[in-house]
Image (cartoon, rainbow, N blue to C red; front, side, top):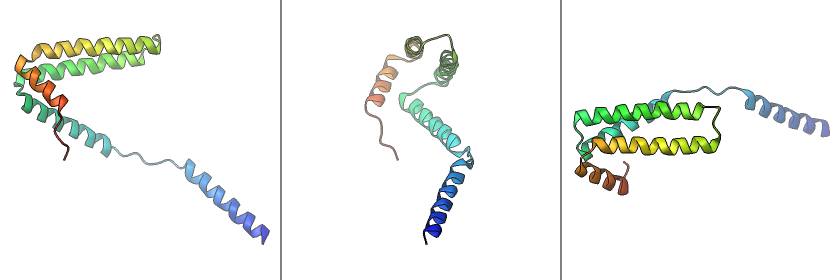
Length: 122
């Protein structure tokens, strides 16, 4: 009886170990869904603020540049974590000022109001 119990426990432990090592298939769906949600959110925000096509293009270009520079900072092995944090903070401030320069005073006020009181999610 003891041998059977020991054998059963050993078998269960072995099965757990095998399952822990099997690779889990990766799906691209969550990333695609997230990208679609971000795009829909951006379009909604653009409409609510009242951005022109030109303003939207400029802001998109700024955000793309910011993302690229952010990646460079994060991947820089010569910087300490504090230096990276400081650089990222300065980068965020720089691009916030660039984007604010594209917006009219009314659009800035609408943006601030939307960020302060976001609409409920569906």
